[in-house]
Image 1 (cartoon, one colour):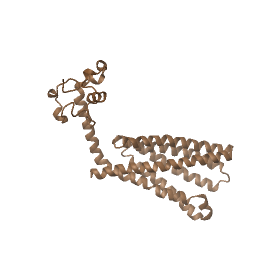
Image 2 (cartoon, rainbow, N blue to C red):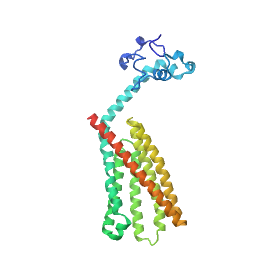
Image 3 (cartoon, one colour):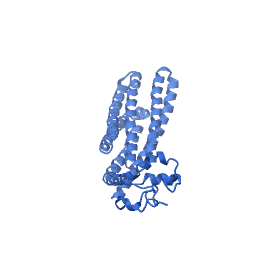
Length: 288
């Protein structure tokens, strides 16, 4: 019986030493960088060799068996390059993702201070809350732009985040001088759309970063799922604003439900951002 799955001779393999391969049925089938696809396939299906597989005649992987050592070598080189890249980038990502996470603190304080009840009781504190909210929003956009050196989708996320901050200030100014709420409500719709686009790029940037460095596929997928939940809630919120103009009571009820859902998603985003930041902070410590 051959000591390989595909029938080749280990002694004739020109890449055995370079790959540090202990033998086809001992090493390459295991899950690590540079694994052999043929070995993995046979082990998964329970075959001693490709000869016992019913798909042998039409197997595209088997037809490339002589190229497998080179393919494995390229995979190993890619993994080594990615590991080196991780050593260089993990401290940067850990630092700025951590700052991004902590920006939720002043943002949360600003939301409390800029509450309508605060506005009636202490206009000065309300104004301070609005200013703090604007500064936090601009800072958040700046950090996203800073992260764009590692993942290009962060650039678009930062750009839209800053536009969203500007529109928020515009809406606040209009509310303070407008005699009715119709105009501010109408301006809120493009504000929500811009915020939605920005969050789309941000969520995908976090997921892409985790995917690229192969550090946590599960968390990357959670970012993708969270985005889908977020867009559903944002669409519901926009529809609720339009309904308010026609059926005020029903619209405000729908607005309340959508707002609660968005708060829940915001909490989940905070948790995911914390986990993402901690992953790269941990890697930075390991690399250091």
